[in-house]
Image (tube, rainbow over the protein chains, first blue to last red):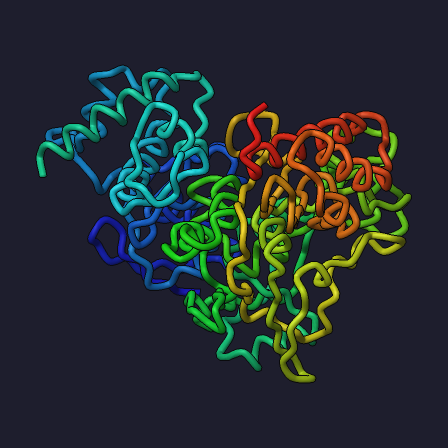
Length: 171
Length: 325
C-alpha cells in the first residue's frame, strides 16, 4: 500500500507492507536512522518521534494508519553546525553515556516542554490547574517513558532544565 | 506479525458490520499492536476506526460526553476534567507514559486486554490466550495478579487506571450496534473471568463504543492513589479512586474503586456503605477494608496485595477527610 508522509518538512511516498511500523519506515525505507529501535514494544521510548507535534512511540504505530501525517524526527530539529538547544545542552551537560537512547530522550523532551508550556499537569503536580513548575521531580515524571540503560538520568534531567531555560530566554 | 487485511472504516455502520463479521477494531493500537507483534492476537481483518472522528469532549446534561477516540492525554489535560473530575485526570496521568497517552484512546483504554505475564508468554498455559489450556499463573509468579473477582481459570488483573476512576464516577458507556444504541454502566461492561476468561466484555457482536458519559461531578473530595514497583510508568500493584464527603466529622457519601487487585475495575458497594455515618478516623478505613477484603482470594506471591490495599484505603481516607494522622 502506498502512503504519503511529510517528514521534517519533506514529502515522501512509500510503498509499505501493511505490517510496517512507522519506525521501520523511517529506518529501513527512508534511511532516517537517527530514530532508534530499543524494545519495539513501547516500553523504552528510544523510537520517540513527533506526530503532528505530539510525542509518540513510532514502534507502536502502523505506517498505513498514518497516511498523510506530519512527522518530526531527530534529523529535523538541528544540524551538526546548528544544534537545537536541547542537543547543545545534552552535549554541554553530558546528558548521555552510550547515546543510544538520546534521540528519543531529546524528541520526548521537546514535546514534553511544549506540553508544560500548554499547562498540562503531571501525576505528581500538586495542583492540576496551576502553571506547571518543572522541578527535577516533574521532569523525571514527565520523561518516564524514556529509559536510559546507562542510567544517565540526573544529567538528562539537568540537560532538559538547561535547554528549557535557554529556549525561554530566547523567546 | 501475521499478515492481515486492513480497512479504514467509512462510517460507524461499516465498523459495526465488519466487527460483527469478526474483524478487530484498532484505534490507538498501543495494546493491540504490542499483542500482534508477539502473535498473541492474530486478527485476520483490522478495521481502523480513526476516520470516525468521535474525538470531542462536550458538556452534556451537567456532565461530560467523552468521544470514544479522545486521546488519554487530551482527556487528562481538558480544563473541565481537571477542574470537575480531578480523580479522572490524576488516574489518566498515572497510567502509561507521555508517548502512549498521546495515542491511546478512551474506548481503547477501556477495551485493553485484562492480562498477566503468562498471557504474554506463549510457552505457558493460559485460558485467556488458549481457552481450556489451563492457568500457569495460579501457582506461578503471580505478585502482579488479582485477588478479587478471580476464578480457578484466570487471575489476571485489569490494568486500566482510567477505568477505575470512571467506575468511581458512575460513568456509562454509549454503544451502537445492529440492534441500535444503548448505554451500559461501565462496571457492567466487564465480565468476570469465571470459566471463560477469553471473553472480557458484555458487548454484543457488532457493537462499537462511541462515547463515555460522565454524570455531573459528585460532591466531596476526589483522589487517585497508585502504588507500584517503580515511581512512574508501571502498572498498579494496587490503586484506589476515592470520592468522599464529610459533614460534621462524619462520612456522608463515599465511592471507592480499585485497580490492580481486581479481574475488572473493582467496586464494592457494601464496603462503601460500611463508611457511611462513621466518624472520620482509622476505624472507618478498617471497616471498609474488612468488607472489601473478605472476598479476597490470594495465590501466594500476590497475598501482600491484601495488606497493601488496606493501607491504601487508610491513606486515601486520610487525604479525603482531611484527617491528620
